Amino acid sequence: MTIQVKICGINSREAYHAAANAGADWVGFVFFHRSPRFVTAEQAAAIASPIGPLRVGLFVDPTPASIEAVLAQFRLDVLQLYADEEICRDMRLWFNIPVWRAVGVCARADLPENGSGIDAMVIEAKAPAGAECPGGNAKVLDWEIMHGWHAPRPWLLAGGLTPGNVAAAIATSGAKAVDVSSGVEIAPGIKSSRLITDFIRAARSA
Image (cartoon, rainbow, N blue to C red; front, side, top):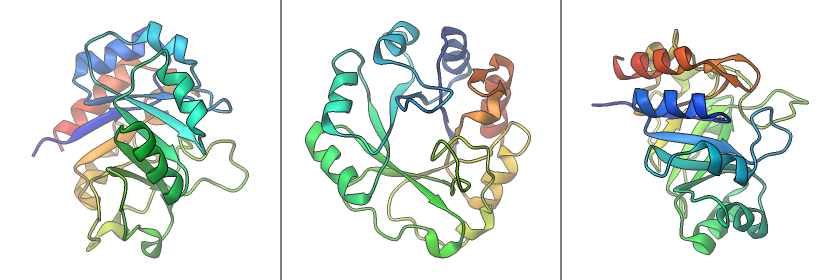
């Protein structure tokens, strides 16, 4: 089994090419103003190559207009939404683009049992109280809570992953796909090409 990898928070050509050259399956672009990884649609279009990893657009409580504004300038293959189930289903129907719902959890009881109307889930630790962003906070999830969980949809493991712990995270959680942002940065919003390469290599060798 080959582990799939998403590198999120791409905001430079260097980071994009590092992810693409190392074989990332997806690259994520954050369209949330309060994130240190925020990019505009115009910036994302200047960063990404026409052919490369699938493009994931991250939105927080989006409206159709906010997504439309991005799609007018930048093609997206997946919408990753921090939103409730109803909004995720509505956006899936509205745009006919696969939707991943980001779900913050802290205990086994938080793991979703229903995934109707969406295509996949991104499972990560709940954001700390007062956090500016709902994800990308480098908070590590207790991977053992996934034991025995029958996921209703395909899912990616996120939250606090690094080149040093991703193999253990995969082995413990049973994840078949992983998502990283802050774990391949040297400072908030500043990606390291070396860490991106190391992360993908470590995930694939898990």
